[in-house]
Figure (tube, rainbow, N blue to C red):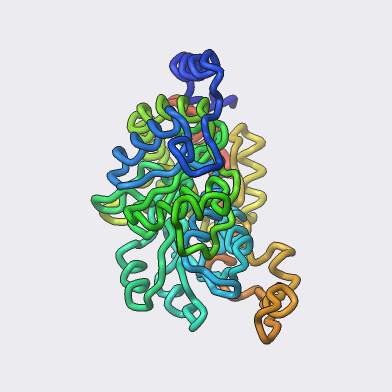
Length: 407
């Protein structure tokens, strides 16, 4: 089977980009305090429209969501050696951004059904060094933000919401990504809407917004002229998103509701057809919340089958279903974390003692078990599926299931 490639662009994005090119102003930033410190016409317009859409006071565009994560952590009062609790089941940038800020990622386990970070595990991982919780709205739906914010308030922790894959989804009456101190979304090429590369940070806190605007654009150059007195972590970067990307983003944002509605329709059609297959568990959506299905992730109950998860994926591939995978690898299994990371005198001379952190297998048993042999992800973000495609997918599952089910 050949699935149509997902493409959220049309002539409107082409026209928007061409309009900017004709002006000759592809970027309109200056790294000095003044009217152009926060960018040009299209940057400011896109940010205003994003803030209005997500019902937040401030939106700050950046050139990638990885940049956004680094910016968000640096904007907080994070010191070298501080701990930030994060999920192990995500793209590597979520934890790498913590390391970039000389802080320590501490991995908490995930919920069995939603794959999001588990509030109960978060509580167990809090120490005297913990300063923040980095939530991951993995695959397209929100974490349990009521429980997480309650924990954060009790322990005086900051909350960063990594909603890279969940733009436009809702947690009760709030947009995912807007319920922490800082949140944000990815705008890279295979998200629901995109600008090629890019990201957006959101917050309702003016002080944090000011710090993120500065970090995005060479903060250290402007603190004197701005009159900024609190300068910790204000070594800035060039994380700026250009005028072309923002002009495209304005057109993309107009389509977001339609694109999400269509993605949910396809996922529900898959639910109806796949939930009848023995040993297969379709995605669970948190109560009173919405899921935007960046990936459509199923679990298999291996006791039903003659073969393992990897063989099932190969058989489905052979019959024509592409875009299948095994979910994210647990981050603490990466060589970087398995080799022991030294925090202390060697890296931070002003600290008294060297501290080695090693991330052993077994620290997140649910996440590790799911990755090992239970999860199959279908990358809906890559395709524009039709109901005819869904019917053919059902036929292939039926054919494969006849071969692999135990009698």
